[in-house]
Length: 336
Image (tube, rainbow, N blue to C red; front, top):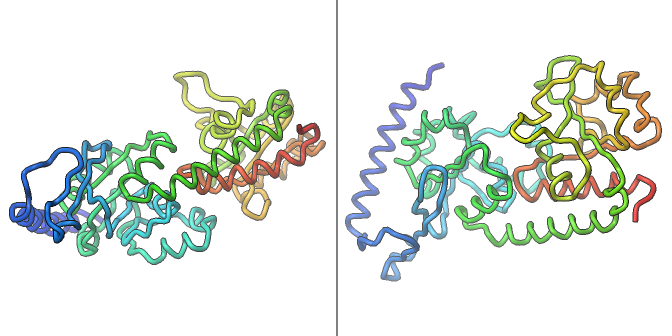
């Protein structure tokens, strides 16, 4: 179904809201539109704003936003920080399955405003009367609805290539949930230090490879994971994991046939994806069922480790990943 009529209705609503906003600004503005600023009277406290730098420029956002809508990849990171959005775009079933209960409750309490960033129901979004919209989706989606979003409420947008720690910082700053971020970052630092201290010899002397397979993978293929949680294990923990040469696409972008599973025998330890219960994820299950996998030295000697990675776009799921990695490494001999 084409969304063009929907977008026209949304644009009309957005234009009406923008006009109302301009009237309010004309009545109460003081002419100062740079940096942090505050209205001069007690009744204007709610109108306090601050500047946020984002992909779409420097945006004036409410200092204490009350009605936040999250779109695309901002949904779960904002909720992970304790945020309670009034509107969200759809998250996948696999994403919701691994959410802590309180976060799932927060997600389900929000109004679903579309299946994805580019398919947002603008009329429904405007009816929520948001005072801030947080967005991360493709540039094509931005070209499609970005201006309409900005007409409805202050909109902060980040590109898909934003590094996850910078992304968490930016969401916490824009969404006024920095206290939760501070606590999560402290936990992250503590967990990384504990792993490095406990498994220092293993980290120093062991070659690892992280393999995976997604529900999008072609039958009979897998890939070497060098992004996402693997990147955290390599760059933050210091595990010796393969990565693509500089300037090349990530190894994870290349599908490898099952015939190449035997080549994993060159590594001391193999890590692979498991669910919260410790079982191989459904997409990866075909790999562990092959005789080639079962014959790998790492597998037959108990050095193939299932690791749970519930997400890699905010500190909460990353901290849970570190807990799982810690438990997996504890099964190896020779820790110090």
